[in-house]
Amino acid sequence: MLRDCTVQPLLTDFYQFTMAYGYWKCGKEETNAVFELYFRENPLGGEFTIFAGLQDCLLFLSKFQLTEEDVKYLQSVLPPTTEQSFYDYLRNINTSTVTLRAMPEGSVVFPKVALLEVEGPLAIVQILETTLLTLVNYASLVATNAARFRLAAGPGKRLLELGLRRAQGPDGGVSASKYSYIGGFDGTSNVLAGKLYGIPLFGSMAHSYITSFTSMSEVKVRTLKPASEGQPAVDFVSLCEKWLVRICPLLRMSQDQINSSELAAFISYALTYPGNFIALVDTYNVMRFKVSWFSDIPIIISNGISEKDLINLQNQRHEVDSIGVGTNLVTCPLQPSLGCVYKLTQVCGKARIKLSEDKEKMTLPGKKTAYRLYGLDGSPFLDLLTLGDEPAPRAGEEIRCHVLNRRDECLQVTAARVETLHRVYYQHGQIYEGLCTTSEIKSHAQNSLINLHPKHKHLQDPVPYQVAISLKLCDLLNDLTKESKPTSDALNEPIASQLPVDVNGL
Image (cartoon, rainbow, N blue to C red):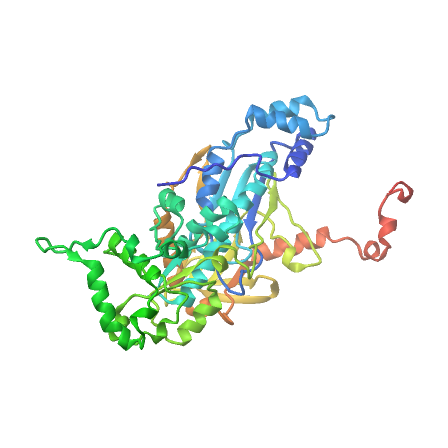
């Protein structure tokens, strides 16, 4: 089942509407513009990211429409000098003229390569900025965090997401369950997420169930029907008591040391769930139970488990079967935000650039096409960004390019296979590609990770994946950088002399 998107157009920053009015006021609201949504650095000390949140973005776009109530609210908060005709404009805007190109959801992605490219009328695609960032930032961060937990645990362990009570509110809780599953977890305790996204549910008991019992007299049902048809029911309570007589000496305990209230709770729960009984024994040192058949019992652990804990467990060659993770998964304490940005790259067919003294914050100009280059071993080794009007690189032919952020370094590479990364997902007011189920997105995420070379997936000291730009894009970047830089004389002037401000009026 696909979750119906409930994100409203007003879930955005106020300045999106103040800018939209500025565009409208000077007649630029319908100017064609291209924005890219991307991130600058891989999260959590790693060298890969899992892209997530696309489906929610598409549902948001397909239902985008300001209601009369929304417009009236904006009238109450925008300056009274705002012209009334602007509100008529807002009543009629929609996304029928917006085109969204994107990576497939669940793809492994890398810095500076757009996750989304949004094209359409300037004022409308500006208003979409904050909401799209909201839908992608947390989703991709949690999916990536979950993928790292999966790598730390190994493929053979069952990972269970138990973070609802620790998540940032109900929306954060549901999103965390969905994107943890996409990132590689096997199930969740979140019932609503199970209903909405078809995620397998898991649950056992809490301490309150155990402490609610006081004695064996509260166990009202004593018999247990065998799994095989035609066999008589068994007095399960008496059977448990007989086993206690045999086990207590092995544990060097007397029957007087058995906590009758806990025994009653466990027997009651076993009678209720004879096919999948789980005993909560995390307050005890179970290693002292030196009974041979304990080695055949599946072990589930949970207790503030972190990625580092899983790495340590792997080093100890543990025999844990299932691992429940909550706080350190859903809150991403090592990095609370992915830091996606939404930057203008083209207006009215002309490339635009944002310059910054921090080279990481400089944007790549123009409308671009992204390609992924694969080696003979089947794994990708380079993402290449070109201008949209350039011919596509071809497999088997030499490709010359520049390493991103090291434009003086030229590469010559040959790919065994070339993949175009972006697809049109939304155009003419319609979702172009069918929405995938959560399980299908998860499958794509896992396949993307499998294809990525292990050296890029190391949880400690991974090898960076390379992103490069074409020679033509590099030339455009250099030209716009030179054109946009102020003269050296202006840079040397005191800042105050460059600002036509009456300081007495500040």
